[in-house]
Amino acid sequence: IDDHGFHRGDAVFEAFRAVDGAFFDLKSHLLRLEKSAEAISLKLPHSLAEIENICVGLAKRVNEPNGLVRLFVTRGPGSFSPNPYDSKCAGLYIVWTESQVPNAELYERGSKATFSHVLSKDPFWSRIKSCNYLPNVMMKKECVDRGSDLAIALTAKGFVSEGATENLMIVDQKNQLWVPPFDYTLMGTTIRVVMQLAQNLVKDSRLQSVMHKDLSQKDLVEAKELAFVGTTLEVLPVSQLEGRPIGSGQVGGISKYLRQALRDFMKSSSEYRTPFC
Image 1 (cartoon, rainbow, N blue to C red):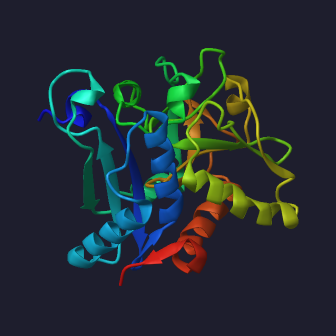
Image 2 (spheres, helix red, strand yellow):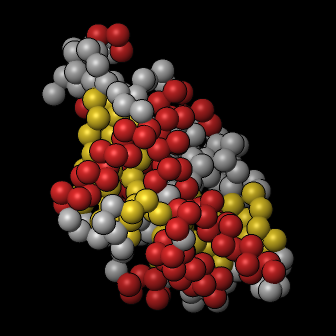
Image 3 (cartoon, rainbow, N blue to C red):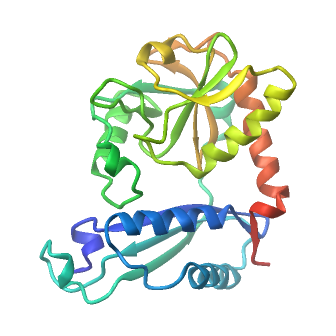
């Protein structure tokens, strides 16, 4: 219980999917883990190659083709002080759970979203995937209390940033796909893949462009489509924002296409897959 990751949130983590006997985009997750750890001067207890091997070993013991893996690196045990030098050594925890994709009905009718009163984290902290998630917890509590599915944080300057645990994207009335910049949001592994897949829609003229942009609340309200994108949610469309319909109020074709394209890509792309069985 004196692990600093527990009583100080002094830890970093990653969550990644196991799909049909392989981890999806594991290397990107491990590189982001390393980057987060470096940002808080936390030395990883093993090399990335060793951590990958441990994850593969765990998967073989679990013996299930699909799941969700959460990997935590903590400052480690040593004292109840905030002093990081009191920790004896870093701790590594890897947990396998069942995949927790929301009910299929939510993807058919679309989710409900609200703007949160909890401000987005400072840009420095927002780019670190640390275990200090109290603002995220309060965002989620607020939206549940309001009868919503997901919350959207704003920066101190009023720009849209991200959800409690996911990135977001919009398709505007000109069929341009926009994602808030990674300057003040977490560089999501899934949103990067989705933006790559969305280029196929540019080639066939269903989209005009796929780019990053500072987004306002007005941009979201007037959007043709709005969706959250993340490891567990995949691409989850939003049909209502603050009780008002997004676009037609129905799930849009771009979001629907990108979710299916992502699911197919997770199963078929050998470059992104780390097999364990």
